[in-house]
Image (cartoon, rainbow, N blue to C red):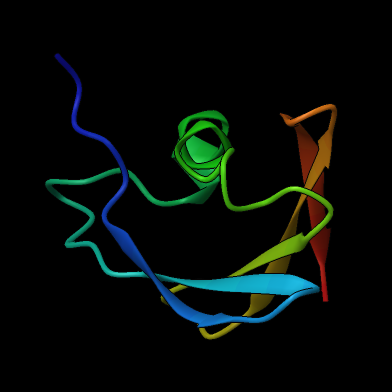
Length: 76
């Protein structure tokens, strides 16, 4: 079985969730490379919320969803 992304929620309010990608990336895939599973993991928490993550490069990126399915990225 393939490893899943290693992340944690660093902020959450009624409008958004912000995740931090923890790595290490030689063991765990990044949120970018595991986006479908991350959205699935957060399905119960993300109704009507925007989901962002802070990558190891410090860039904030939005995970775009439609009907609880990952459909793309938006760099913020």
